[in-house]
Amino acid sequence: MFSIERKDFGPDFTFGVATAAYQIEGGQTDGRGPCIWDSFAKTPGNVINADEGSVACDHYNRWPQDLDLIRDGGFDAYRFSFAWPRLIPGGTGAVNQAGVDYYDRLIDGMLERGIKPYGTLYHWDLPSALQDQGGWMNRDIAGWLGDYASLVGKKFGDRLAATATINEPWCVAFLSHFLGVHAPGYRDIRAAARAMHHVLFAHGTAIDALRAEGVKNLGIVLNLEKSEAATDKPEDIAAANIGDALFNRWYLGGVFKGEYPEELIKVLGPHMPDNWQRDMETVSRPLDWVGINYYTRGLYQHDASVNGFPISQVKGPLEKTESGWEIYPKGLEELLVRVSREYTKLPIYVTENGMAEVEGDNDPRRVSYYEEHLKAVLNARAQEADVRGYFAWSLLDNFEWAEGYAKRFGIVHVDYNTQERTPKSSYRAFQGMLHNSK
Ligand code: FCB
Image 1 (cartoon, rainbow, N blue to C red):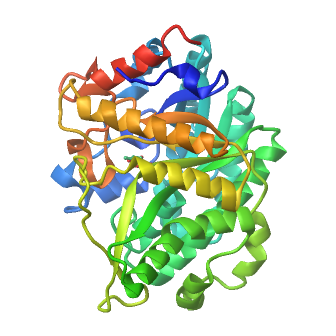
Image 2 (cartoon, rainbow, N blue to C red):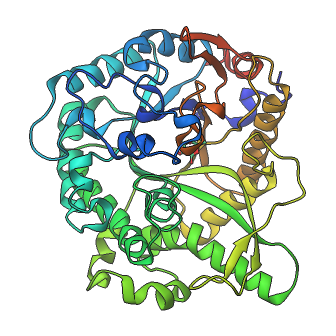
């Protein structure tokens, strides 16, 4: 049980759970086109245990039961993502009617159960046909995403409580084009510089497209990390500052101020697309809310052996989750306050927060993780950060990208042999706090 109560958050605070299409849907028949995670996962060595998403949690078929779990947990909202390759299998052009029908059923299923739909356009499943043309490295991605956004706006816009363009642009760009950890798996500074700019340019273009369709309550979901220096040596403090620029300020600065950090432009400038400056007005289109995903901090030290960004990360001393990520609730509080003081007065939603834990339905460490992070949200609100909602990552154990099915983030356990769902203690803790309190 949590020691905090729902009323501590005020009457209008939204509690939800979050998932993403590729991580749970499966259902790759029915006209869905191939995406970059299908081929990335089939490439040996990219994903632990050679896991992939063709069945995942079979949410494509089992969504009624999953929506029942959300309702019965007492949650107000469900943050899900649309699969671009399910709606437009080739990325552009022909629409897959079975895909439209599926999201129609899913959204109507939420509304019937009193659950508010929070949709995300892009949670990493880029149609392969677009990757063939350069994907996020190609400036045309803005138009491709814009057309896809118009389709989503037309078909579903009037039923969505909130819509986000991109989930975690740092992952889309840097993790996937510089660090090579996620699809498409590039390790190339030119690829990264282009993706870092195009992902935000495409975001702004999608905002315009959604607005043109009359869709209300638009935002973006940024993953932020508390970047800290491993020691108080000046060179480590400088390294943490570069880490902060790469992880946080590129995206916050771009979206809310129309500018990128000077120190990064010095390194990335030669690799950026021509005339990127002209796009900054689109990059910084006004929004209605901002989503923040938070998991941990990053501890940096100077590393002279690294070109470009002379930094590396070290393992910290704090208690760690099964992903090896330090548990650091204070970081969430400080980031929420920082965003509201330095970047925007818009409503903030914590759109993801959670931890990987060993398998089982008794997860007391996760219960206390959630409790400590919910307290961090309350502390941030007390410092005038306008936090309006909190979404637990994740409803279900699921396909954790390059970590495969081994890392379990669900508040509901999934047996991948039988697809049986079993609520964990953390689900019960939320239920205890939320039940009968709407
Ligand atoms: C975030 C992703 C989400 C999930 C969690 C653990 O970076 O948005 O899909 O994998 O991490």
